[in-house]
Image 1 (cartoon, helix red, strand yellow):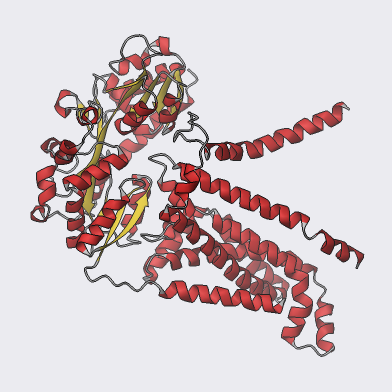
Image 2 (tube, chains in turn cyan, blue; image 1 turned 180 degrees about the vertical axis):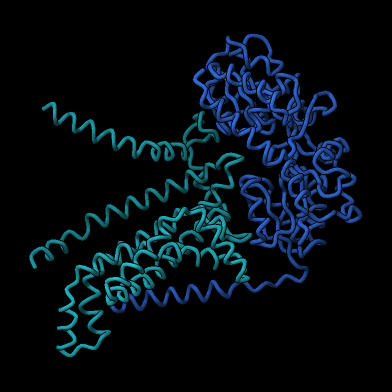
Length: 262
Length: 354
C-alpha cells in the first residue's frame, strides 16, 4: 500500500517537473497583462495578434520548411550512406562510423562558426540556402545513428534470396531491405526534424540578413522582453504536437495486432 | 511505399529549386542592410522609408553586442548600418571597422539630435566622426514607495540592512561593478586593481542583503511587489511605473552609467549612400517620435521630444534627465587584461560565502 502510494507520488512529481513550465506558458498566453507577474484577466488577444504578425508567421514558416527539407534530404543521404557502409569491410566501416559520429559530439558553436567560415570562403550569399545546408549537415549523423542498427540486424541472405528469385537490385532493395529498415528511417527522420526545429546556435551563425527561424526570432526579443504572442504560438505548437501524438498512439492499434498475429 | 518515396523526393527537389531561385531582386534604387537590436524599431518606419526612397531595407536583428560583433567582423552578411552600444562602437573604431560619416548627407541628424548627446558620444567617438545617437538611457534605482521608509537617493541605500532580502542587483559584470565603484567614488571605467578590490569588498559585504542577481527579471519582480529596490535601466522604468504606480525611479547621487546606442556605417559597406539616407530618415522628428513611442527608451532627438503630446512624459525626469545635473559616464572598452581582472574579482564575489 505504502509502496504504491510512494510510486504514485514519484510519478506525479516527475510529471509536475516535466509539465509545470509548459503549463505556466499556456496560462500566460491567456494573460491580458504583458508582464508575467500580474494577471490582467483572460484574453484571446495574443492569439488574434499572432495571426496578424507577419514576421512571426514567416519565421514559423521558415522553421517548418527548413526542418522538413533538411530532415528529408538528410534521411535520404544518411540511408544511402548506411547501405554503403553495410557493404564495407569491418575496419573501414568502423572508421567511417567514427567520422560521422564526431560532428554529434562537437560543440554546436564550433560547428556553427566553422560552417560560417566555410560559407564565407566559398563565397555563398547567406540566407535560406546556407541555413538549409547547415541543417542537412548536422542532421545526417542522427539519421545514420538510427538507421545503422536496423541495417546490422538485417539478414543478408534475404537480399541474396530475392536476387536469386529474379528481382533486380532496386527491386530487391525496395521489397526486402527497405521495409525492414523503415522504422529506423522514420525515427531518424523524426529525430532530424526535431533537431532542426529547435536549433539556435548553428542557425544564428549561418543565417543571413532578413531571414529568421523561430528560435533566432525569439532570442532577439530577449532584451526588451519576449512578446506574449510567442507564448500563444508555443501553446498552439504544444497542443498540435500533443494531438498528433495521441492520434499516432491510438490510431494504429489494429495494425500492430495484425503484425503480432503474423 | 515506392510511390510515397517518389512523392517525397519530388517535393524535396521542387522545394529546393523554388527557394533557390526566388531571390532575384527588382530594386531600382538598391538596398540597405540594417542590423539592429531586437524589437528596437517601429516596423512602420521601415515601410515609410521604402515607399519614399524606393530603397529596399533588409532588416536583421541581434540580441547582444557580443553576439553582433563576430558576425559583423567575419563579414557573413554585408551589413551597411549597425546599431551597437557605446563601448562596442569604441571597440569597432579601434579595429578600423567603421566608415566616417559625411555630415552633409545627414541634415536631420545634425539639426535634431540634442548637442548634449553628441557631447556624451565624444567619450567613445571622439570628434563625432562615426556615430549618430539613436536611443539612450541611464542606470538607476527603482524602488517601491510602499516598501521603503523615506525616499531612496543613492547607491548607499542598497547597503542598508533594513532592506535585507529585498534588493535586486544586475548580474552582468560591468553593471555590477559599476555600483561598487560608484559607491566608493571611483570611475566606472576604473582599471586600478586597488580601486576594484575596494569595490569588490563592498559588493561582498552587500551580498547577504541581496535577494537575487538578475538581468531582465527586475522589471517583472518589481511590478509584482516581489522586491523593494532594484537596479534597472531607465527605459524599463517608465514601463514598470505604468504597471505599478508605487514604483519610483532615481538616478543615484553618487553618479551612474549613461548608455547610448548609435547608428554606425561599416567600413566595407557597399551601399554607403543608402545607409546615410536611412540614418537621416530615422532622425526626422515624426519618425523618431514613432520609434520612441514603440520602444519607450529615451530618444536623443530633441525635435521629436517636442512633438510628444503627453506632457508628463515630455518633461519626465526619468526619460529625459538633464545630463549636466548628474555625474554620468559611459562604459568604455577596457581591454582584455582588465576584462580578465573584472572576471576574476566577479568570481570571488560569487564564491564568497558571506
